[in-house]
Image 1 (cartoon, rainbow, N blue to C red):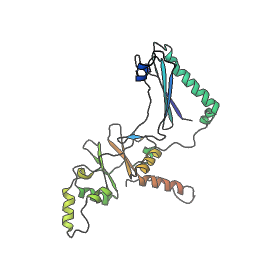
Image 2: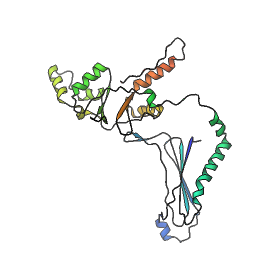
Image 3: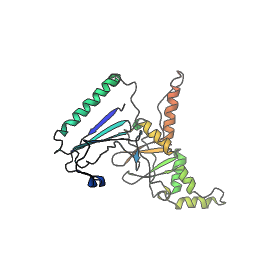
Image 4: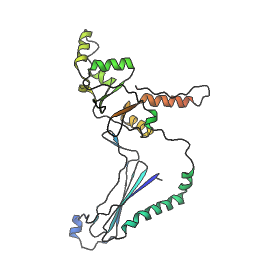
Length: 275
């Protein structure tokens, strides 16, 4: 059973879709309504690094029909969208209340109301609970040698690239630096350092970066990192400015602390660090 049901009910006058079969067939439509059900992704999806919070379906009105329904599931949510012609269905505005009443009746029959009344044992962890806010960053104009030195001295492997106004513009990782660096077999160390000093972070950084927001579920972000095989996710605000970073090391530390917590003599303190 879905933990949330959205009911969307736009009344769209004159929204008609004349299919070829309707043009060729008789004017009388042998149907009263159409209901289409499309199962969507079970997990939340992302577009250009941002989480898609809601997905709602819509079905165009067929010629002569007063109301049609489109139903779609997405990330443990269910959306029911009804499209109506107010001339044919003047009481369409009452449908939302009837759908909610039907959903309550179904939940009552399944005993879900009683289950919802039981207090939760724990608050779901958010990205804000896990992320590091003191983020080591670089600018796109910095040299690769600067990025090398920052990673070495600050013991991190991921450096968000930010603009002067704090907006996230990219990400450079230790792996990126290794791929862009000359071979260690070169006889001249001075040549290696010169090449690092001449190349810029903007030349090798990744610009299509998967990001998260502080209020997002930490579990969702962790599963996204597993699926995409990435080691970190920068955290941004609504304006796209960098506010933190969450890394695979943060998840590993949290897991280790909570596994150790089951042993009385093992201390379990909260600790996060950019990596």
